[in-house]
Length: 172
Image 1 (cartoon, rainbow, N blue to C red):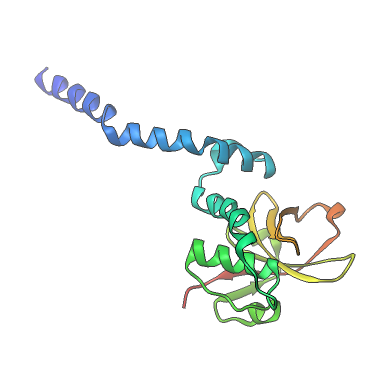
Image 2 (image 1 turned 90 degrees about the horizontal axis):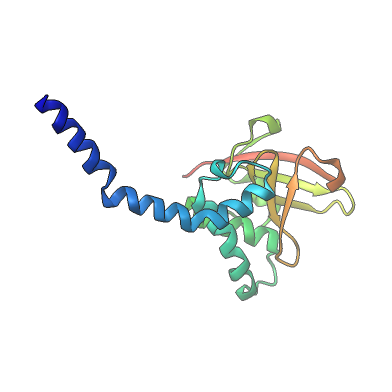
């Protein structure tokens, strides 16, 4: 009987610990971010758990207006910003150099895509090559030429995108 009382006391103390309360508060503050991306990606809100990635996507909107690089386009700046802030990986500053970089492992089949993989694509309307970041549920994000985030579904032919290749990132 004494052991049972000690067991219930330990459970009660653990369930009321500040650590548990702190985690709940953190999740409550993240709900708007989770809700936003669960709608965009058409996923349940509890499946949006890599909050650092989605916070980095949100910070791109604030950062892009302060960047003034004449020779580097917004899509390349975006992918460099995300890869550095999220994964501490520095990529080259052109589409072709990224494709050839030793930190990039190319693959073709989109069924192997995981959150954080790169998607190399072109818009069939203007055949301009670009790169985006795969999120989940067939969606990837890239930056427009004006710096605005654009979300694409790989399986949706309305976007008129052609996937050229995909890539996993490796640290040196």
